[in-house]
Length: 231
Image (cartoon, rainbow, N blue to C red; front, top):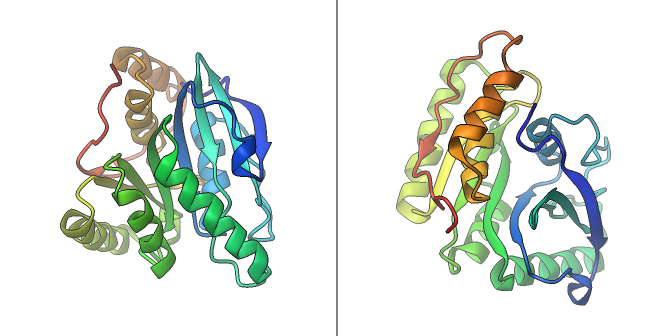
């Protein structure tokens, strides 16, 4: 079973004043609409429809909290960059996202989802800029790696890593595919340390989950394993 197997929906908010008390540990998931954010969350939780996936980008318009138990939360942020969303809603999202990312005391780190075919868009860089001042860790998932060849993804991974090292040193990056499950085990282990979960337990659960699955090559996790285990 996945270390996030028992993740359940907790609450959804559309206004900052409705955020739950900052009493636990939160990891935020952010990304451009249609980059595969909901699919990544579902893959990590080993659940088919935990986070709602839609053929209509921009459908997620609230901050959705999912509880792992013991005060641990995955936080699904609204997707950004979808042109058909009215300007007023885009402005509301921008305020909601930037304020949450920059001021939320219980937020331990951010997972930034980027389509491997279109990484580091201007809006992706804006998200990194918003979060950089906090000094908190960022882990980038280059999703949909199954859409390109290994040679192509390897080159993109290298270029993104070089950019992040120079500009956002608190970032790490890896390849990820919800289709082939490439990178799921590595991402689960890293996020588990952010949540303060026991590393041996994470390895045991990942091993049990993958016991009957075909072997997937190392997705080449790159960058600093930022964040560490919580005290």
